[in-house]
Image (tube, rainbow, N blue to C red; front, side):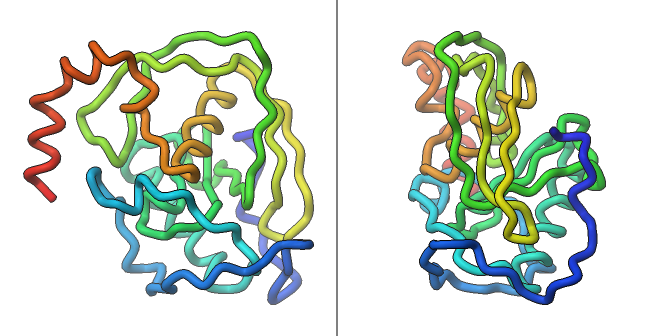
Length: 195
């Protein structure tokens, strides 16, 4: 869950994620990463699988946790810092030291759904009602490359679904009813002119 400590030090220098092909994205200095704001195109592209967990990726994860906490978010996906990688961090209490990192996540959704308001760090000032599964099973890999499986419900399940959407290039805008998107027109135009 989100309360588990996810920043344990590794004893291995590198770990390979089993049976996955490495992507070759740009590898900027993790310290320079910042939150990307819509309409940046990285936010609407499907991210590539992570193939190798190395020191660069671990630094990226630490930077993502810092950015999540400093912007008072409960989750942050790699595309939101400009990296087209299937990776996200999440922490129900918005604390970096409680954040869990999930690599190459896969979600199994329950059929029961509920609607709640969501915001997004890449869409500042934008909030809207989004329908999500009430319970999910989140699988993927941890920072050591070991498989993980977490049953989640309620708010943690919503966070994981929101962040996983980012990995598929899906924003909350496309999950909102058309009338809500129309009502947000002015704020969206302001964001578009900021970029």
